[in-house]
Length: 312
Image 1 (tube, rainbow, N blue to C red):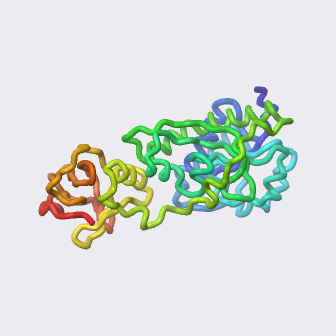
Image 2: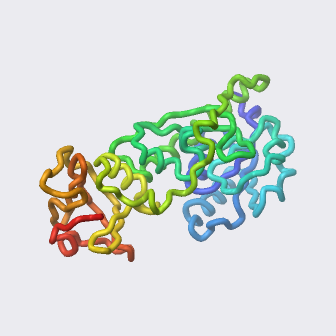
Image 3: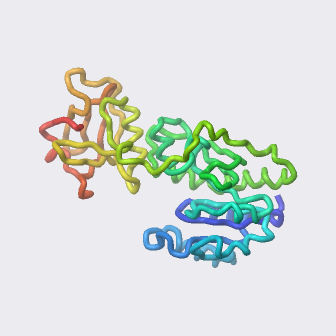
């Protein structure tokens, strides 16, 4: 495709927002300009996002616009075919979404409508899926509710966690955007390229993962517990359980055995040494390789768990 026909602007935030931009530039599809928040999470994301995106835009002579509210810069969107949104954290008004001729499109790291809203990568892992669907959809006044333009599937390995899967999404983000917009630009005069979401399957978008969802239920299957741990590993809020009235956060786990110890209760420690724990579950033994306490201190397994009590 002639890049001169690929006239779009780009709204970004976070690591994926930057990684996607790098990919778009390297594949000869740079945006006309980039929009970022003026200072949202600037201390937290300065090194991973604000600094590198500023340097990259300067290097490639791409105008960079910083804003507190998109409404303040809406006139900049006039005359462009489309916009791409990757990680941008503001809900954009319908009036602004309609300024570009073909609309503004959002890259969402989850299958729609099933994983509308918050934490789509974590929820995809928690529910035991073998793949994650990256979705490029047209933005409308709802939350992740617009028509789907393009989907791309990423395999989930049993040892993937939320961080490794996020990195896989970053790696494929620019390819997904380019494939989607090439599809859009080659079919400008037709709407049959879009797939309408069946919102009856998911009437409301997911909110952030609740404290109750993070609590480990040892009566659940070993696979579901392992999925919970790897879906919520730091820097995300972790899965947790209580041991002798102390709260512990589970950082890393593996499925050790698919046969449990019949003589022990669910959540009971079967084995402990300095390197790991084995905890009895409904249908197997879960190997725990890393645990923090509620003050974010890494735990010495033998010092704390040698009595081999029960997690509840």
